[in-house]
Length: 416
Ligand code: EPU
Image (spheres, rainbow, N blue to C red):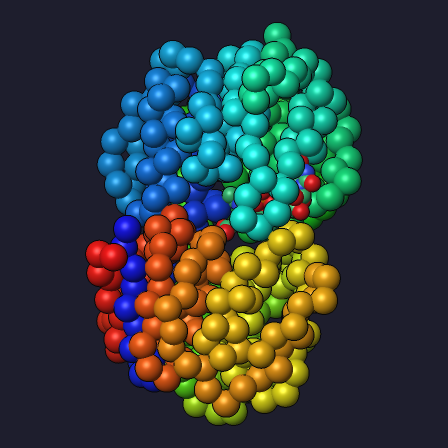
């Protein structure tokens, strides 16, 4: 297993280019199951989670070629199953459920279990598929879904769910009649998927608002589409610049997708100037503590909560960070405290009292975003930080140690 060794204290400087969004690429690739022929996807990030979905699609019978531009042909679907060993490594594998039932009339997908950030059930995906007329059985740890043809329905999501909205939006494209998704997720990744589906001949409107209308069509055709930039990767580098007192220009990102973070960083005293194709983020001032509450988009993303906590750990004052999306997303707190952070957890709130300096320590990554937070803390800390289990970070950040080293960080990957 690899680890990162970080010598903290270097100010980051220069330019970094953001990769395609993991959480947009995954549903786009799953949507290839909705029609035969070669689909073309540009700006696919080179990540472990992308390898996992490629394996999953390959297992179903897809032909796949390319890299950053990836071509996928699902003319010949040999089986309709997402096995346990793949769903266990990546919960987003459940995104093949909707497309498979819609096109093939059946799917067998391992039921994802709980994970490091919460219980994360898929009950809303299943209830919505039932509303579209699918028969669902849970057997031997698998979801078994069947429908000769789905039919449109009005579906209300009790909770705004990103992959739930995506799964059902994909399924509804081939249903008979009109589907209305109420309290749909509004994340940019959902919009990227809706635009891609429309490029395939689907009739989806309202994506980006909380009501999405899908008029079902009989067939779809292949598409050429581009994955949006990864707003969470971009946000992580913005915080990296802020936490090291750096001056980093982030290229290839859409600042408009990061309004909540930009507002919070500005409140904290960080300067953020829009530049062509991105933003210049300059720290070097005293960081003021600010309160942060995670919410569905356009609220503050839960996927940046751990990273902003690393910044608040060296803020002046007290910051209250409230996590409202996942019930167990404070796994990074214990590790940040090993580096000298002063944090108290009270239910869904973390109260962070800023300290002058964090101190390097051996720490362990527990999930993707927690690992990013510990890398950021390591960059700002005095002395050496060893971050173990970096395989978590490889799921969602392409070559983070190389991108940071190019900005002047002292970070290396070593075999543990
Ligand atoms: N929920 C249910 N029932 C459901 C579905 C969701 O109770 O059927 C609950 C969840 O347990 C959670 C809340 O609803 O409390 C919202 O979860 P959501 O379904 O929106 O999360 P997700 O679709 O499983 C995606 C991202 C996550 C990101 C969340 C929230 C992908 C592949 N994953 O997950 O990304 O944290 O939305 O924005 O898009 C990450 O990249 O590190 C990551 C975890």
